[in-house]
View 1: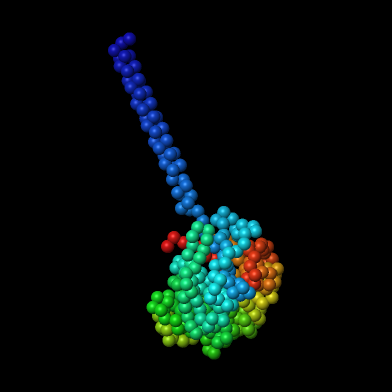
View 2: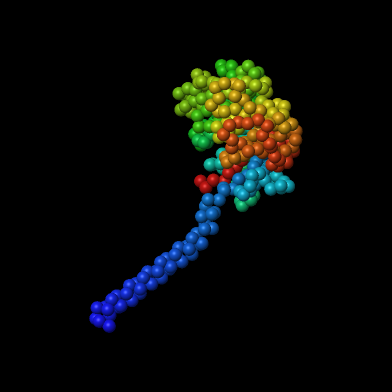
Length: 351
């Protein structure tokens, strides 16, 4: 073999050795990556898993608040699972409830107490407990309550025709005298106000009297005056824009926000839906007429609305993640509770 041929042969063998080394190195990197992925997979799955959620409901018939955990892998509780008692003392006729998930508080409207109260929520695995009862506002006769993202607490005083608020700042400073945001003596769209809901800009309330003239469901600015916007406790200016979204029912009870829609119940057997941006009162849709005495409703933040049915002693659920409101939605049983009235979903957030 010539010297040139020998050199070419040695060069070929060298390239093969280098190539083999690169392949081995690549295999090693892939092996490490695979092992790392296998190690991190459970942690990633845990990080992106659904946050623990609890369905909470009031029972005026038993003077209690009950709850049940909502499994993360399905809609609604497990079939046959009974609700557990959360609050068994200190309440007489609990009706509306609301949850502040960011601050872990449960607010309870019990008109017999003459004040609005709250409890600190304490989750532990699949169980839930509460701290001592705390006074939020007094003297007030409260049947419905809602909390906005800032921690401001909204509620209605049906007997005195008022929509009230205790700001987050007032709560922090321990002030219990609520602000009168809308007063029926000035605003004709406030007529025995019942259930209410809030978003970042507006407050929505239902009327339990004169709904077909004053509005069944009313939408109004949260801060109708500069004084109220600054959370002045003595401010009572009533100069904001008030807009009835619906006037189809004379007396209504519970309402909730789900995506771009509002849902609300009447005194008989119907659940209605209307877009939050509705400008024509004819946009109301009868979502279901299969209830007996529907009361409060709540949205789980994902795809489901829960509705308490007092006469049926049950809480029902239906899929609310629809782009357009449709009538006659099928409903399913979520839980059983004697005289179910108010309902809320508590999602455990990592705050």
